[in-house]
Length: 238
Length: 221
Image 1 (cartoon, each protein chain N blue to C red):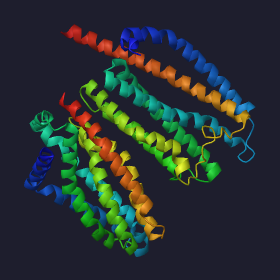
Image 2: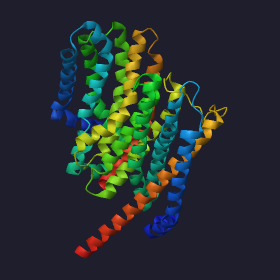
Image 3: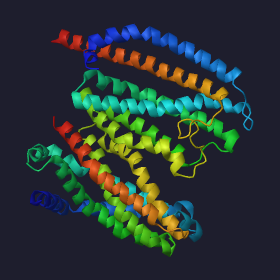
Image 4: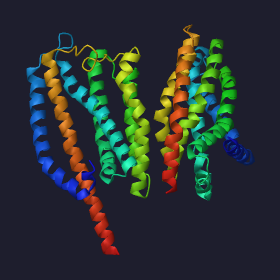
């Protein structure tokens, strides 16, 4: 991790990794979508509309994971003044916000046929909505300062403060009486979901993860190149 | 300890010298609550159902108003740099500032809230949990607000940014505060929700000083 604090070394390392990630993303998402839309069985109660799950659950999992990664990168940046971690945290935020929005919208589209409502104020939905607002607040804070490093460090503190929301999201379906269904995969006693659905779900989740990694690496690389451009321009103007 | 109390006394003295701050917060609180009967209609049953929520939400917004000035004045005239050099840790100074803020804005809100609940026909069973909930919740509002105020020091559009940062973190306080009142009115007892609010207060007391002090040190660089 500290070897990658050098931007040039990070660019070399990510440059080699990126094509593999991109190819893996396409393969996994392709396979996952095929399995989810054609191979996986319809639900005995929900019929074909259960297939929204294969988009909703991976994006929900990504929404919280990306926030966790953002908070971890923020911690690294604050503790060790790691320059690439700073940029990594900042670049992950719009991706995380996008996944959260996708989760909320796909959940809403799934809720209308299943629950009869586009939205309900239960614990899980409310806490994910709060997560979305935390992402937006983070993005606003990062961009609110004239000096980019000040914004990045302020955002780092905010990201760490917002981490308390993650266990609330995870355990909200256990702690409260919610309309949203309880945990069926990561729970004591093992998953309760059928293997024929679990495998496509897992592959979609992996595909989403690699999609995030690919986009994240691309964003970090662009940010590093932009920083280099800015430095060169300043050098030229001097 | 005496340094801590001196800081609290300093902030209280400054607040009293300024005069209008607490009065403005209370005026905003009263005016906003009064808007609701005009908006939703004066039917007592309807107002009674939403009274707890209205009082809590407007108290939240009123507390938000006075947060911007928590560190702003000291930051602008350079006293924050001097305060950072004190032997008293910055974390303790944050607590001192929050205490002073709560005394000047939270405490008046707690006193006025039952009077406004009267205007909204709150069920009589709801008053004790309202006061207890606000007594536990308003310090949390001051504490969480301190993080937002410290983070948005020197930012563009600091006031709006502060609201955007702080309101998502206020939501649990709001949820449990209203739940306590509703539970008591429905006969389930306010104790669980009040205990959760107390837990949030303890969590905030423990964690906020570190986050806010880190943000202040960031602003001073």
